[in-house]
Length: 66
Image 1 (cartoon, helix red, strand yellow):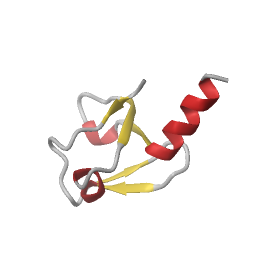
Image 2 (image 1 turned 90 degrees about the vertical axis):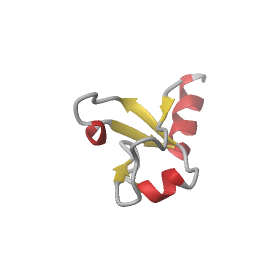
Image 3 (image 1 turned 30 degrees about the vertical axis):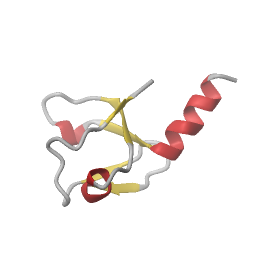
């Protein structure tokens, strides 16, 4: 199971792209409770980490268990 991005350090002006579908999720959406999964963390530049939206994460987990 991938980790969920916490709101710590996230500001409303940030944007994150889903590595699967390309949808953009804003920092405001994360702050407001939208889940964004960390696929590959970049400890030096957290914004450069690889993320997956909740919908794509659900699809990925279903495919993994088939």
